[in-house]
Length: 379
Image (tube, one colour):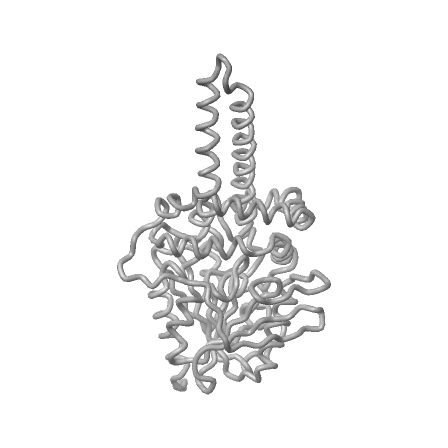
């Protein structure tokens, strides 16, 4: 997952370089127009105009070039439910909770990935709201949730927020479904409440997630492990200190398409539609850089549930993707081997956004798992 810091940072530098070049071309045109180098000045002007157009609208052709057309595909939208409430926490954070479906039906609580928000579950809420009570939360500082006053974005804090939501809603036999850091949050929650987990949780779905510091289970893990403390930590603190500047640069990268290139490489396999690519790219662009950085630090510094995986007693569905670059399939395989009542399904082809790109297969697999939880155990 550190590549979510590294690759956008490199592309953002490229964005800054284009702006500098664009300004320089305009300066050259202004300096040489009407002189014996007027032809040179005109070429500088044409180049500057082209770079300006690319900077403002480069994403339009790029997102189509990077994607494929899919017939009759329901394209994702950022939609929020009118049925929602806010849960205030002692640390000053406020957690947004949204509801879909029949309040009396089987509850399924979704926890989204980092640099996103609850709207990333577009296909899941559409699929499951007709048969389940769908509950979505925004993690602190993302979506409609307020960040904590003490700047605590540890997995332990997020797990405590999840526990607070479960108690607040008086949920019993809830199914927890987490994507990426959402899965880490669920595993941390299960660790924190220990044997009591079965009193509240019926089953868990862990999608494209990991059991330890994501630096160790993503692509180029050896390289990122070597630079974790000397490079990645300082980069996070720099993002926190210069958050407004990074936010402006993120939006510039979104407009010129560099952010789409990054998202395509890190999260998809190439079978996604242009709208799906733009949807996830926009969600990551909306995420405040300071929140992104603090969450990354929380994952790198404090997250590891390796020793407690065998203690997870509720049934688990582990969803992996064969081309997931952020959490490689080996992480899912390890969890499957160490969680007794677990099933492993690998989506092919699939990336870190399998819940978007391969939503049909993912939803059917989750539906079969949920149906299995309804059947009584035969002893």
